[in-house]
Every structure is written in C-alpha cells, then in structure tokens.
Image 1 (tube, helix red, strand yellow):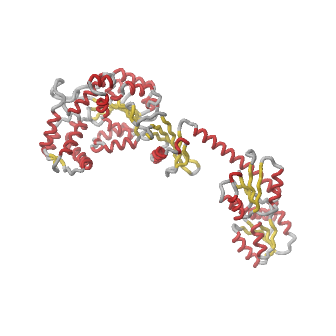
Image 2 (spheres, rainbow, N blue to C red):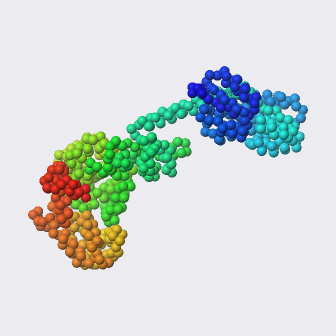
Image 3 (spheres, rainbow, N blue to C red):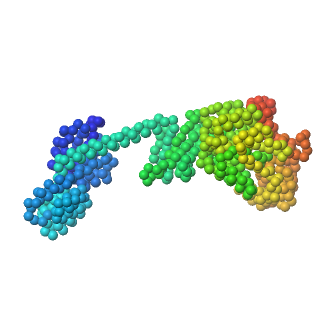
Length: 595
C-alpha cells in the first residue's frame, strides 16, 4: 500500500454500508480502504485474521467498534450515527400504526434521546450493551405489545427471530464521510507522534550519554541500544533506584566491565506514572574505581567502609559527633587535623554521609600517590574529578604534597572555584610538638576552612576498656574465638601505654593479642611482651621523650612504611626516584603506599 496514504480497515455491520464506503474512498487520494462485513464478535475475528501491519487505523460502528478497540493496539474510529440518521428512521416509522421503540447501543440511544427531547417525541428508548441483553429486552417488549423496533443490525436479527418488525438505523453518506475524515486526521496525529518518538529515539541513540529509564518498582521502560545487552550494568543501576527516587537529583559512579561510568539520575512523572531516568557517561577507556590516586565512592560505599572498619566499631565522642554533624550541614571546606592514626579518613566519611551532598559521589584523592602521571591526570585531564561539580572531594594526606604542588593545587581550587561548586575536605597529619605548616595554613585561610581536630588516643585513655570490648567482639566473630576480655592488670598496661600511633596502632595491637590468645582472658604478660616490642622503635616525626636522636618507636613494618612515605615526599612524589633512593623495587614501594 502507498505509505503516503492513510491505510484504513473498515469493519461494517451490514452489507449496504460496504459499497457506500468504497464509493466515497474512490474519490479520495489521501487514503486507501479495505472493507469487510462483520458485526460484534465476527468483526473482531476478521481483525484477528488479517495482517494488521498493513493498516494504520480501523473504522467501525457501535458495539463492534468498542469490541475491536479492546482487541487491538491500532487506533479505532467509530462511525457515528447522526441525529439526522435517527430522524430519517423515525420518519419511516411514523406511518406504522402499532407501538414501536428505539433499541440500541449507547451510540444510537444517546443521540435518539437528544432528538426526542428537542422534538418532544414520546418514543420509548432502551439502551443495550450485548446481544443477550437485547434478546431479553425484546422478549419483554413483545409482551408489552410492541411490534416494531428501530435498531441496529444485532437487534434487528434478534427482533425478526421473535417475530418483531425492525427498521435498521443506517449511517448516511455524511456520517460515513465524516468517519473517513476523522480517520485520516487521527492517523496524521498518530504519525506525527510516531515521527517525534523516532526522532527522540534517534537523538538518544546517537548521544554520547547512554540512558535507562525504570519505574520505582524496578521495571525497565527504556534503554539505549548500548545498554540493552549490558544486563550487569542495568542490574547495577536498578540497585540505585531507591536512592535516586528519594531526591530530586542523584549522582554516583559505577564500575562495570572495567569501565567507570559517571551516572546522573532524575525522577519525573508523566500523568500518574513516575519514572527514574539514569544518564551514563563513560571515559571510553578501561578504568578502575581507584586509579591515578583517585577513588570514586557513593553513599553505600562510604557507609560500608565506615561500618566494616575498626573505626566504625569504636565510636566517636559525643562532642566530636556534634561538631561533625554541624560541619556536615554546610558547604564550607573542612580541614581535618590530627596525629597519625587518629581516624581522619573515617571522620571524612562521616562528614560525607551526613551532608546534604550525600546523594552525589564521594571522591577520595590520596595525595601520597600523586606522582608525576597521577598529578598530571588530576590537574590537566578532562576526566579529572576537578572538572566536575556537585561532589565531595576529599584530599587525604594533603601535607604529603611538596610545596610546588601544594601551591598549584591551592591556585587551581581558587581559580576554578572548586570550593564553591563542590564540598571540599582535607586531612593533614600533625604532631604534638610541631605546628601546622605555613602552606597548609594558606589553605585554611584562603579557603576559609572549618577546622576539625581529631584527638589522639591518649586523650581518651578512660575509653580504652570500652574500645577493647567493642573491638574484641568484632574480632571474636572474625577469628571464631570466644575471648571474654582482659585481666585488670592487662587492661592497666593498655591504659598506661602512650599509643604514639593512636587508634591505628591500638587496632593492630588488639588484633595481634586476639590472634595469639589461648585463654578466655588476655593476660598481663601477653600485653606486656607485645608493648615492649612496640617500645623498641619510635617512628620518625612522632612525639617521644627521648629527643630527635632516639630510636624509632613502633613495629618494623611501621618504620619501613614511614620511611617510604617520607622519601616519596622528599622526591616530590616521584615514586621511581623514591624506589631508587631506598634501593627497593617499585612493586615493594607500591605495596607499602597502598596500605
């Protein structure tokens, strides 16, 4: 058939209507028409037997059109019965001397009532909705003395079987022409909508961003061609529906198939239906979720890290929690200060999880790992997190950067106004004797940072029994043991030790004691032996009473780790130069840096 024409299928209730429609169609060049005769269920059977891909729209009449509409997805236009059609039939019945009534589906009786009201005709009018209803009604009318009905095709057949006369209400040429006009117009509207949909689909398919739309219940409504076969990625997106549906906008990163996707979402409503749309952009390269010294996390990742860590078991003080809660509610940059091992990264995760930006990514930039290549990625690459907005940026170990890079980072933040378009957190390691480095003070002053001081463990010695019990409970589960606690004298030793590496050292010592424990209660001699080993060393930069020339304190692993970090800082972040200076392989250096 000619695609420029409206291809119409006509299902008509009586034979005489077929040639009438065909004669009207012959005089038109905007449509092509196939007509079949069939009423009610027969009409539906005809539709089901044909290849409906050949047709744009269907025209039919009365109850048949409604039945067809329930059994096809193609638009159906009803051939109306005009007031003139009904008046013409009433005029024919005026010459009949017996009682008569009008019986038909609503398309007939609605117009008949209007006409009779206007002309003050006292004609009984009865509405039916099925052939069985028509049969019962006609039987009653016959008992009441009616010998003539004005009706449609179905009612006419039943009336004759009951020996009741019938005058068929036919559709005139005007009604048929009007139905053809509406069919062409309706198809034009649908065709315009289809073309618009194809245009939007093509626009989405050729977009650099991929799109997936879900219902709040998780049903996939639409996906770009690039996503249709990526069931793993679609499954990852569906897990984000509750979080995305809870706010007006939501951002996260998803790692799938070695590619890191930046995901934005919007919730919207059409009519009464709600949807969640995800828009994805990838870097077109294989990335890890942690690379170039940058880690991409969302709220679930941060909460998992918090709850599964030692620091999540050992809770923060009430005063510190209140301070963090207040700081989290604003957009000011925050500088987190504290000695080594004082839970600074954990504090950053808590700040993020309580902030108004928790529905956007939490991006951790480990300044220790920002060597030449990683630094260039952060400062210059188009995929750098510094080129995005609306995220929480956490610069961990800011003080590990050499002076030149600190100055460059500060100027980049100020020039790009990153502290206004993102939530920025910093962490710096301090000692009891040394003050804050001048360049770190510049960050604090120039960016108007709020300062969050993380107290050392020695300021909370009275909490060590509580901390020990909480962490031992976690270790018992991990190690499948049943350690009940410490002997009083063993606990006293723990409380007397200065803990130069604070919570990190405390966690490591407790874990080693739990691993070695063979009795329900950890004994004092076990604690004393382990703490004596700790006293054999003093990590450079930590506060001790022995002066700067004393032996390092801490385990051998701590000494090696600190020496590596210090050498990387001294070489300006050049890991190759640091490894050469230390006379170790880059693999060994990398192992200690990532711990």
